[in-house]
Amino acid sequence: MKREEVLAALKAGEFDGISHTYQPYSDGYSKNSYQKEMSVSCGTIEVTKITTGKFFDGKENEPFEDRRTEVLSDYEAVDFIESRPYYFKQRRPDLF
Image (tube, rainbow, N blue to C red; front, side, top):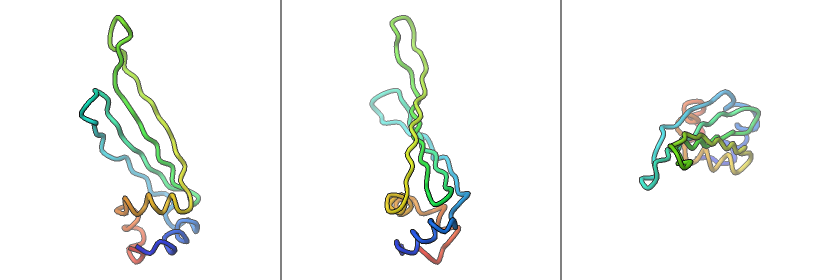
């Protein structure tokens, strides 16, 4: 992957509009499930990590959902693209 050129393309907005929701997964130890959503706009990647599950409140199991959003830019965004290049490669295959 051409990291400098990918960074330049990201900053130029060539990857804007790419979004994807990754398949949920479980850690195997708890009853929680985890999922990631990704969207690209204005040269940054927003990654939302979603945790869903249940907790016991003393009477019954109560469902919960926790969403945490992380904004990646510059080389953090390039590292993310390098670890998950599929959707980016479709937009600019010459960089991969």
